Figure 1: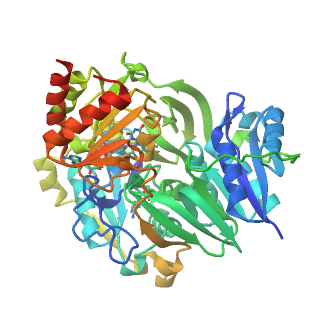
Figure 2 (figure 1 turned 45 degrees about the vertical axis):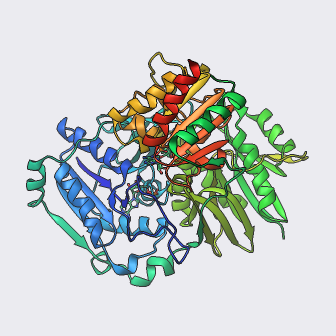
Figure 3 (figure 1 turned 60 degrees about the horizontal axis):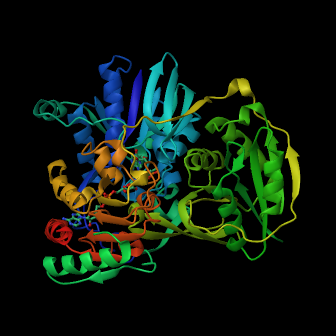
Length: 263
Length: 324
Ligand SMILES: Cc1cc2nc3c(=O)[nH]c(=O)nc-3n(C[C@H](O)[C@H](O)[C@H](O)COP(=O)(O)OP(=O)(O)OC[C@H]3O[C@@H](n4cnc5c(N)ncnc54)[C@H](O)[C@@H]3O)c2cc1C
Ligand SMILES: Nc1ncnc2c1ncn2[C@@H]1O[C@H](COP(=O)(O)O)[C@@H](O)[C@H]1O
């Protein structure tokens, strides 16, 4: 069985983010990028299925600029067998539906039985690309998996709900499933893996290879447009204490006593 | 002509969920001439339909089938697409809930229309929409526009919109189901509780929580010592429990435990909505974070902008002295 993981190269979550000068997104110039956290868990699920013999091939795919190939190299070093990098300057600014059309075009003849994606990208939080790809392929679909188990042509998925509840569903393969963080403990690339990755195939696909025209993608063709980006309203807002650590600690103790009745 | 807005009602165990009323409220606010239609999928749900007709829906469309007794992505996708085809709404609003984010992209792909997800507000006029949605887990508001699409599609965050507050005298109609139960690609099996250890933070009166900002599992001792000094329990954001620094039962938020202690201290936690819904009803909230723009300061009572490794030990020392 052939499997695919969709990965996105995103700014490291532990960064302090600033809005860019155009006021359209965060300023990415000073940020370090990494594999979207959710996607690391998705890759680990496929590698575990491969270890168990249920999956023969694990392919990683990203759509993104030159630098995003580093996300694919991480996947290859961690254990993926091959990688597909869809890259074209005209793709810049594509909305999720446009990206999904591009991914669909890149994979529709591959015959993947199982496609995993992250529940959401940590930057744009669109929470939809996996579902869009499933819809375009007409595959079975489930989101926010906290457990996957394969038996024959059926994939049982435990979906995360709220308040510690899970919804168990059965999907007929082929299927797309998005993965929630915490489903497993992702492995790290070993030195051996990093060496081996250098010999693994990484295919580059541009719009020409996909048979798509530049004006069918990118910001121009996208129907979901960014028109602003700002810090959230502060609400009532906290009283902000200032001073040395000992001074703010003393003020905190006083308030905790008065307002929380603790101490 | 009125702007026809279809909302997907959600229910479980025989009761409508809050998101249904929030969607009704937002649909009325979204357009000055909104005609709000609620779509209710289920089996034996006529009482719920009557309730929707009173609490905000101008019309309720009910599709009943044993295959809709419980949610499944394929059955819901099928009937939502069928209802959209027959009703031809200007806009479709769905909750950004576990079932909503599951089915909404399938419907959007079926219609080849864009989907604005995780919105707090939406304004619809002349076939276009402006939405305020969250990005970077709530650290920013991302304003998006959908121009000239039919239908406009969006998912709304839970708790973001006020429920409809009035009374309507809506009508109820039935649509025949069109799905073929034998052909569904996804099938509901059961709902169950996830396993948890013995700890129950829901009753704690003091909670000190650590987030990704703590940086490493061994550094959690700094947080644990403050919890001990305040006579409280140790809590965490999902970033900490997913990384395996603490067991899942310490996780506070929408997919963990909901708490309301007298005192909640958040250290190195940004304040993502999924965390905040689990602790915002705490009596007194203290936030310590090095980012002055962290959303946690928006809901905290008092905050310190700084390095938790400087502030927390100082606080621990004084808390110990205060206890004597
Ligand atoms: C469906 C779903 C369900 C979810 N359920 C939950 C849930 O139940 N509970 C939950 O918590 N999350 C949940 N999440 C995840 C949530 O969206 C956030 O990703 C998570 O809460 C972030 O955790 P954090 O605040 O610790 O990390 P981050 O958002 O990365 O924040 C870390 C913070 O630490 C600060 N910091 C860094 N270093 C220091 C320092 N030295 N001193 C002071 N401050 C510092 C940074 O400024 C930053 O604000 C869920 C997400 C989804 C999609
Ligand atoms: N540019 C991309 N290339 C490949 N996969 C992506 C891309 N963007 C998003 N994804 C996948 O879709 C998931 C959900 O992303 P989103 O819908 O943007 O929140 C991510 O976790 C990835 O698995």
